[in-house]
Image 1: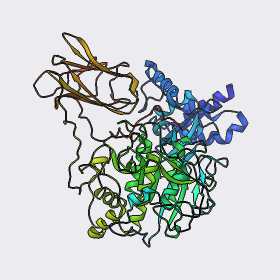
Image 2 (image 1 turned 90 degrees about the vertical axis):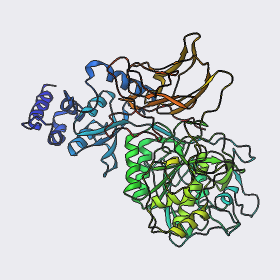
Image 3 (image 1 turned 60 degrees about the vertical axis):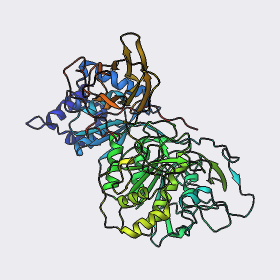
Image 4 (image 1 turned 30 degrees about the vertical axis):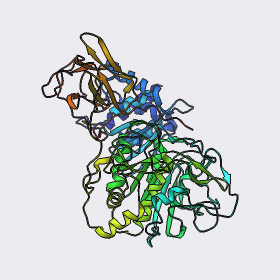
Length: 635
């Protein structure tokens, strides 16, 4: 109404400094006390305060591009509430930004995830999101995304799909325990005297299970989802299964034993990052991990995935790794492809592949250059709610083996850093093939005793190189990676071998490519890609197929406005072109013998090609909005 309009205008005038910098906080504070008298919504004032702001964030809405982008982001994976609001992650620069973000929340205040990182989650109206990202007091805005417990891959085991009560009073040692901590030729590594706290971020914990340590409800866990989703209950089973591999009680003639069988020599903290249904949100997982770190956890185990690269999540894990000294371990993913799964593929996280009882890579285990280590993940027997047990399969089952071993080794060397523990695990992992490191096993299968002996010989004074993740992580390992982008097999007759390494941006479905020949036209092509995913395409093509063309249907290339996409093409092991910054299309000559070049992008000015990264690229620290790619299937 008119009074509200006059008050808004008055507050606006009062809240701008003489140099026209926005100083929103005093206005919002004043409004807080006047709302009940004038019935002026905080959201309405915030919209007025934000009007006309054209600072870093999105381009001006007048070109129509931002609105279309946001609409598609919302369509692809936004978390919408029943009242029509959308869950949004916000990093504010200062208290003015915090006030603005709070004012746009449906309840008038957001939920802080990390005070140190200045990150909170709000539930905002769609029309407010773009203006929020443009505000100079806001550093970053991302749509919240849905995440999932990685599905049970249903191994061919009699107990694979259902829980069973113990049939006799005999404790079983699952094969995975013997694989990661063998009892020969030397005795199994026992737990040290220094208790390490391990956090399991998953669907909860069956507190009171006959074969799991009993935890203190007031102190030993946290749920960001309220009283209907308690951390000490597990309506799904996934979290309890993972916890059992890490720390099921040994020597009690019940159920199964674990990597850390003496409950008095380690401790659990449970972060219920996923609901009983098996799904959760990026915000929920972020808060669960933060509570783990606040509680003193040194190892965090996450058998979950979903969504794409998030700069806010990346930054959080970087802080936990470099500042808090926490070792974060996650499941590589169950897609059976070379795509990056998150959080495993952040370089500050150890990505764990799965093997079977014969030490062969599981067919479902994802393979890429961020896979760092492997562990048993096929028909792994562990605990389920209700004093039950079952054998499940997935990289979800491999992850807690590595987390458990990390804590076990750390218990002997409390003065070692998280980076040194990580180095010891991968430097001593046992590769089932020719050794070295590859995209399928990383450095190999984790071995507790070997990692212990490595640190026993080296101590905790050695330096660790730059954090890169995957096969580039270990600076002390003597063997070079066994995979190489220039290792091309031969093709029959006069055909030549074509290889494309493609990293899609945040809009993978817009990317396509083709190879053409003057005699046959199109000889091979690709498209229909997922977002923020790495693909390797290999083809035998005819000798006169000389033109490679990559296209973006939206006309903004694959780098760097909405993600950090890139491509590189080889023919018979010789690089022919690379890039990512172009307009509608980019081309490379597959027949020239000259050094690889990138043709000028069309349309728009020419841009120098960017080299294809060997690790998932790190976007610029100010990324206004990250879409939610297609989440993995649930069980």
